[in-house]
Image 1 (cartoon, one colour):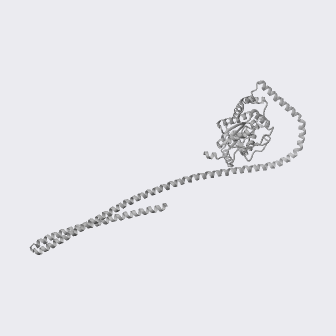
Image 2 (cartoon, helix red, strand yellow):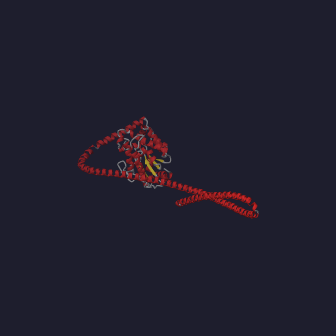
Image 3 (cartoon, one colour):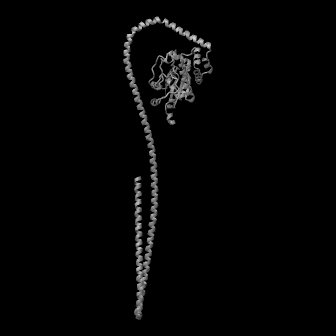
Length: 499
């Protein structure tokens, strides 16, 4: 992925922390500041009357991943390795693509996110991370008061889960400086503006500070000192992790040590007596409620019939709700398939465009090579034409020279014949005058005639040879001219096709 594509994506803020660590309050503040935390949020419940502010898509995805590993879907686990099935990764990528498409600052909140920090960081390199840390004794007390069944049989398990979650957070923060921030739960309650400023700095985007979202009584802090000491004695690792995270959040180390100072044996015994006394008081109060319980049971019998009727109606409503839920899941799956198909088509279009650009570049290169080859061929043909033209001129020159030579030789022969005729005339005159010398003159004349006849034959043979040679050279010249004409016509045809 290139850097420009990453910069074009909207900013992402992920809010995480251990269960019961005021992450819901932090999420409500961030949502009020302008960050889209989801269109379908989990409804309010007994533990969170003001709402959980958890995106149901991320919430259900995390639950399915946990279930595929055979773990509690609530996320109460100390497992270090949790495998993400390929189908869940595909769903996560489709979910991210839909959120990015809004073009707005977005994010989500779910405590279970802490179990999959590296998984989400790999898919969302542009994400920023805001973690809320709350003292382990306060979280344990909140879990006990909420009555989660996972901690009834083993109360110490609550501290172990707190340590497992926050150990992951501490390791993650150390590997990503500048991309993470840690805030304390008490600071989230006390100063909304400071929390919004931390989020703005992380995202590099200004956010508006909403009005107060905190409802008095929902956040219980300041546990009894002996309870903090008990948690520290039961899980020293949890206290060390809390100290490290609190220091990252800007807390004073002395205050942290004072809040969770270890208990001496007598203090442990006294703490046990205090809790024993509270349990006995609860038993006494339970006995005082027996009479009221009897009356309540009678009232309960009265409303049981109404309850049965209501249950029948509720069953019908539940069946309808289950059908709607199934339809919703089907629609989401179809939407995810359509989104994946659109992304696939987009990728194919990008690949095709790249191939088209490469093909155009190749065609331009081939066209340039063709033009170069055409110019080179034209230059070669021009050179051949010049060479043939030079040969033609040379042939014409040689032919003219041969003609001049033949004319000169014929002229010389004519002059020679005229001279011979004159000499013969003189000889005839002399023969007439000198009859006695006629025989001798005739014999001399016959010998001269024979010699001239031989010379004439020789001259005729040479003339015929020169004429044949001239005709042969004319044929060669005509062949060269026709070949040159054909090449020139071929070049002109090639130029017209190239044009």
